[in-house]
Amino acid sequence: VAPDLAAIARSGPAMAGICAEAQRIVEAGVALLLKGPTGSGKETLARALHAGGPLSDLPLEALDCSLLDDVALRGGAATGAVLRLTERGGTLILDEPAETPAAVQPLLVQSLTQLARGAERRVQVISLSSVPLSERLAEGRLRPDLYYRLSGAVVHLPGLAERREDLPALVADLAAHS
Image 1 (cartoon, rainbow, N blue to C red):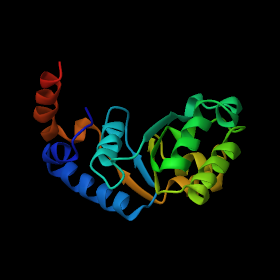
Image 2: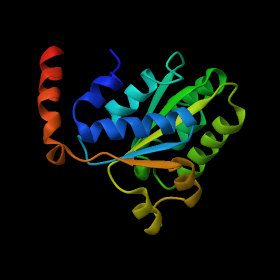
Image 3: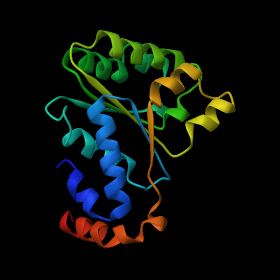
Image 4: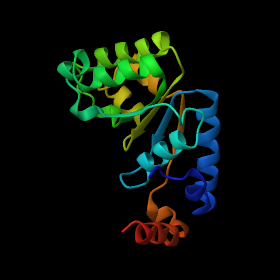
């Protein structure tokens, strides 16, 4: 069951604003970077944005960037995801792009360029990061061209410690799904 964007937005005032902002960005077709601490709900929000957005009838592909290698990008799972999205359109979720191995970053840029130029239908890229990509860029651990492809618009998700009003809704959701 896909996460419900409206239910996430109802969990509290902070998330209502975050959901509205992220939804506007996705509807505009801008690459979205969701940043926040581990456990803040980045992946859940990304999946809800896909399910409730203009590309909901198209595929959703998710890649863990820390696991990418040249094999994955030259003929493995990542290549399959890119080819499917190039043919059909849809949403690509990139988890922790700051952890993409340096040797693989040029291939990821090439794949993203292929999606941007060669897709027959629209492809939305949503990246999830627990570390600021700008820090990795400043440290020289992230290519500038990859940084700019991923961070068209940035939305920060505060940790649950900062969103205590969300806890009752989260507990109710967990109870309903267990």
